[in-house]
Image 1 (cartoon, rainbow, N blue to C red):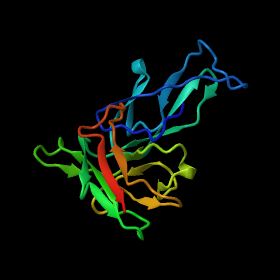
Image 2: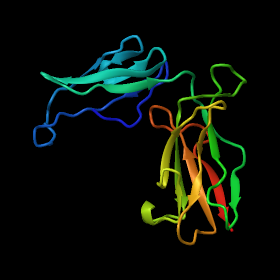
Image 3: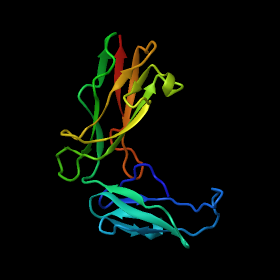
Image 4: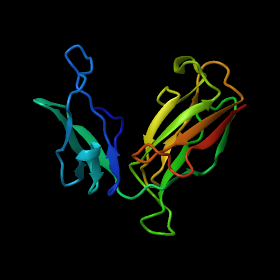
Length: 207
């Protein structure tokens, strides 16, 4: 049972998937798998849908999958505070690098809660935002002339800090960069459905 950065909000449902593997790493067909919640103060079990429901905020509530005498490694699920509704840009959507600049200004996005206090847009911390270079399309990160600070063309960052934003920067690498690069930021609900306004885009120009 694996899932990248699993989370569920209080009152929402997160459906999980599990499979039983034999010693060769092949799926065992017809195996019966059940879900068990370890940290019941933070998660409730929805056994009919092989899912969990958020009960209280937690940085890592654990669940396990069981199949006969087999038990999976615990899966840690975040239950962050608030209710994410939308994704928005923070600050400028464009930046221009001179010929001597090597790092762009910070590209910032925030996840907003419009539900908890109606009429108020509250930035939420501990929400994952995925930044991706979408234009131009580079064949490989190691040969790209522009990359994120982690030397990739895609970086997931959690919102946080004093302003509860997710931030990245582009770095100029060896070679001639394109005239401009478009970076897309996206965020989803725990179901995988995009937040309102997601994705948003930034443009970084190179002189």
